[in-house]
Length: 72
Image 1 (spheres, rainbow, N blue to C red):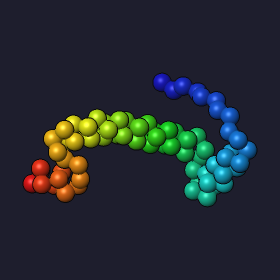
Image 2 (image 1 turned 60 degrees about the vertical axis):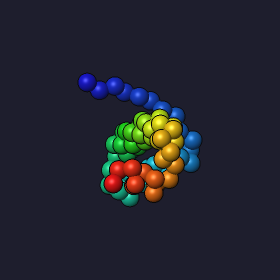
Image 3 (image 1 turned 120 degrees about the vertical axis):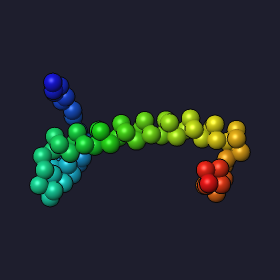
Image 4 (image 1 turned 60 degrees about the horizontal axis):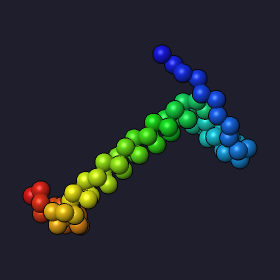
């Protein structure tokens, strides 16, 4: 099932999106869908990373070297 979303973009951003879509040979809708998907993935990843970072600090893991030593 699909849902239609209507958005309003500033003229400059809309122009950049149109130009990019033409350059890539893709439609604007697909680019926006991919962008939103990537944004949501990164937001979820950062949330998990922040949660793990606090747990790692409690165990004395504060650098990449510490992490490498812990998993090696």
